[in-house]
Length: 135
Image 1: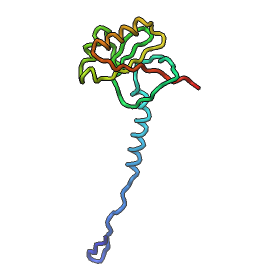
Image 2: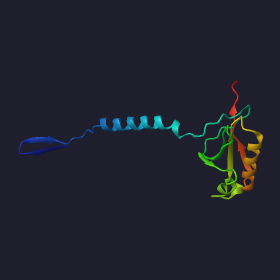
Image 3: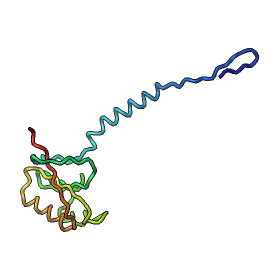
């Protein structure tokens, strides 16, 4: 668009400088790449390996038992006796799905007590988390 004022022609600035936009996008990409591994579950357990494994992508409530038989709800340590009342919070317990992650070195007694606590909360849909065997 040209304007004529007393013999001079002025043109409107039609170009947008995208250099700052590219800089911001690259910084955001770098931040997401660095923080994504940190956002995964913080409790380190060595999950048993099995042949049949279903991969799930949605976020669910996870109960974890580490090698020292410590119990975690999501990433927060909890007492196994408090687990039933903590799991009852939120939606109807009969419709809840709980994922149970346990280190392969956990004694069966600790595993059974956590399973019993989950059942006391009224949750019957319990999935045990495993890793696939390497072929």
